[in-house]
Length: 235
Picture 1 (cartoon, rainbow, N blue to C red):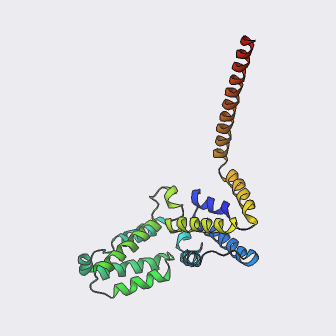
Picture 2 (picture 1 turned 60 degrees about the vertical axis):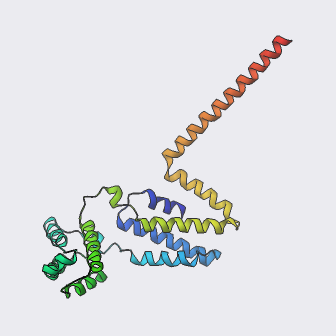
């Protein structure tokens, strides 16, 4: 499990690869519960399940390949969403209607929950600042989904909530494993996984350690030689 978590943290993974690794972690957690009676704290477990439920599977919007023309048209409609209460009062409902039609024509695969929410907003003539902020967040999220302007290291990394949860899982399991016979084995597995996933860093560490040991041995030999010389002259 440590190897999968390390891959999520440091790898540049597309959505379906992230989902695959997250499912592996979830399967490992269930195995710990069923075979070894090792459980996550209830709060961490609930947050983890909620996070997994929010993930999109490979056959949703993340994997839909829009042609360039339809993607351009869809992005144009998305960016036109009114995200302030004043601008929404002018033609906010019309802009939302345009977006919903573009989504249907492009078959972009946006989750039903987001579509349903936007359809409800379309029926409003006015929105307050809170709803306007939610509209802005949704617009920005959709622009990110269908735009490729972000660097791959940002676009393909796990989000902050995923990072928080994987760290919480590691910390919780470490505390529980310390009290079992699996504690030593877990430490050894983490060492092994670190060597596999960070080979360059491991080589550098070994090289630096060898230099320190070499310098220490050389210094020790020098002290011994000096002591011998001093004894010889005194003799």
